[in-house]
Length: 186
Image (cartoon, rainbow, N blue to C red; front, side, top):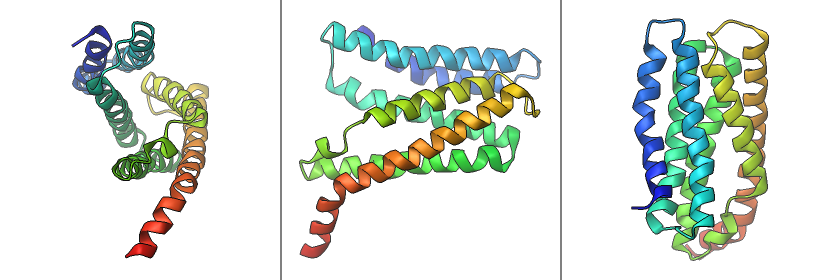
C-alpha cells in the first residue's frame, strides 16, 4: 500500500460520507456535500500524479482507481436524479452511467483478447471527465431550484453526456474489428 493507493481508497471511503451529508436536513449540507465530493475528485487527479511522479503505479491502483471514479460519479448522479427529478438531469445521468457500463465491459472483453490498448483512455475522455466533475460539484452545491448555477450544472452535464456518447462511439469503432471478427468465427 502506497500513498497514491491510499488516496484512491480514501476516495471510496468518502462515498458514504457524501451520501450522509447529502441527506442532512441543513441548508449548509449542499455546500458540505459538494466540498467533500470536490476533495474526492482532487484526490483522483493527485493520486495519479503521485503514482507517475514517484513511479508507484501498482496493479491494485490500476484496478481500483477507475472503480473509485465510477462509483463516486454514479452515486453523485443517483443522488442528484432523486433530488432534481427532471429530464435535464436524468437523461444525461442515464447516458453517463450506461456508457460507463458499456465501456467497462468492452475494456474487459478486449483485455481478454489481448487488445486492451485499442480501448485505452483518450483525451476526449479526459474532457468528458472534467465537464462531468465540474457539473457535479456545481449541482451538489445547490438546491434543485432553477438558478444560474443549476442551469450551468445542467448544461455542463449535458455536454459531458454528449462527450460520453462521442467517446463511446470512438471506443466501439476502435474495437469493431475485434467485435466483428469474433462474431464471424461463431
